[in-house]
Length: 290
Image 1 (cartoon, helix red, strand yellow):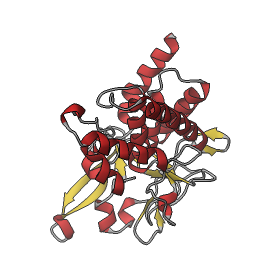
Image 2 (tube, helix red, strand yellow; image 1 turned 90 degrees about the vertical axis):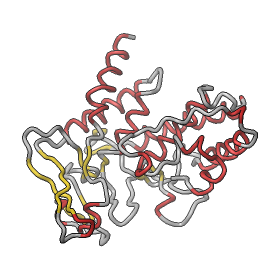
Image 3 (cartoon, one colour; image 1 turned 30 degrees about the vertical axis):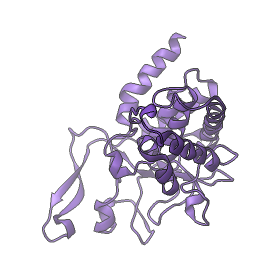
Image 4 (cartoon, helix red, strand yellow; image 1 turned 120 degrees about the horizontal axis):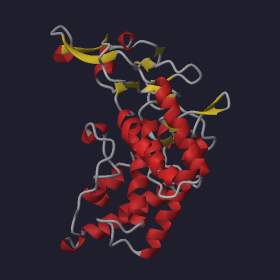
C-alpha cells in the first residue's frame, strides 16, 4: 500500500490516513489523521514533505496509484483500491490541498499539485467503474494500470466486483462538494449494485473447534434475523460471491477453501451498511436540495 519508503520518511502523520494495513484499521474504513502540532517537531514537517512528494510521484499519469512504488514487475503495478489504499492516499491529498488540519503547513505549490492529483484520481475512479452489459456497477480491488480492466492480485484475489473496496470509492465520490453528473451517476450506480448484491439471512460465525489450527473454524449459517452482509468478491456477470484459496481455484462456497484462507481473510462483511443506510441517503437529500 505504498508502504515501505512512505512509513520511513513520513512517520505517524501519514500513517493515520494513507498507510494502514487491514489489521491496523480494525473495523474502521477511514482512519482519521492524528492531530499533531507540527511546530513542536523540528523534523516531522521535513519527513512529511518527503513522504508527501513520494505520494505525488507514485501516481500514474492516468490518475491511479499502484500497490507499491517504485514499480515492480508483478501485480503490485496494478491500480490498487484494495484495502482502500488509493482512497486513503486521495484523502490525505484532498485534505492537504484544502489546508485542513493537520496539513495547514503544506506550501501552496504542493497544495496545487495535490488538488490536481485528486482531480485526476477522481477521473480514474469514474473511468475504471466496471460496466456489465452496458450498465455501470462497481470496482475491482485492482485494475490494469493501462487498460483499467479488472486484474488479479494475490492468488486468492481474482478479477471481480468488490463488495468492500467499492464502498470506499463510492464514499470518496460522495465527499466531493459539488459533484458533476458523471460523479452522481457513478455513485447512484454503485449504490444500486450494492443493494442488488446484499446477502440477507446469513451470518458468519467463528465456531470453536479444538481440532483445527487456532482452535476455531469460520462458517456461514442461516439466520433470518441477521442484518445484511456483503461478499468481498462477486463474479463479474453473475454477481455470485466467489472465494479462493492459495491454489487460486475459484469456489462459490467459503467452506470449500482451505481453513487457513477461510479464517485469515475477510470474505464477508457489513461494509456497505453505513453507506446505504446513512451516507448515501443524506447525500441524495443534500444534492436534491441544491
